[in-house]
Length: 218
Image (cartoon, rainbow, N blue to C red; front, side):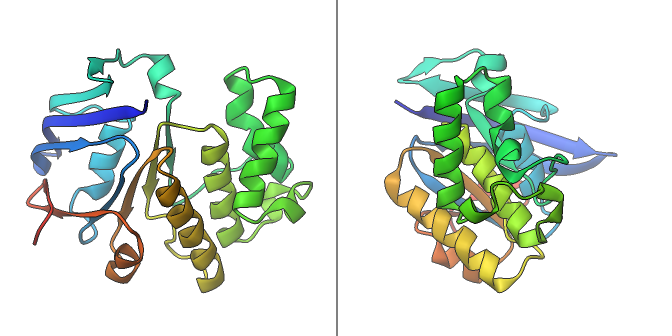
């Protein structure tokens, strides 16, 4: 059973400027949620708070498994993965980059290799597995970041503008991967984008950031 994510009356301000205001929402397991809104409206801030990467000024982020609350400890955090607009890579092979999150989780070597192979195949980077990650294009690097997140097999995958500033071909591949994941419903996808056309291509619940809050209508 997957995780339920509940945001309860979340507030966040920077320098006295309110960014997220009394935001409450429940993300159900296996769902796909696309959060839209103009740049600077608080989408990325809310995503970081939901992923436990940043603390709200007020409010509560709750995770439940079958209705039972889960402590926000390291074990919970390892069930969450976020892919940022700029993916950081290590100066080693593509395969070893994808394996990094599995290594720190103590995954057995045989299982680690199987997960890396599966993730690389999904994002169509199998032919690049022995290539140095630093030599990849920006679009390939984003696909590497997605593969690294998927290899962990998280309960919730957060994606912040996953196709910003990358070419059309790589954007198409990333969108195809995300649509396939969405159809499988094995994990929860929460995607932030400012691209209305892209949001329409995802089959999921469309949410809008308005006045620091999440609404499902304009």
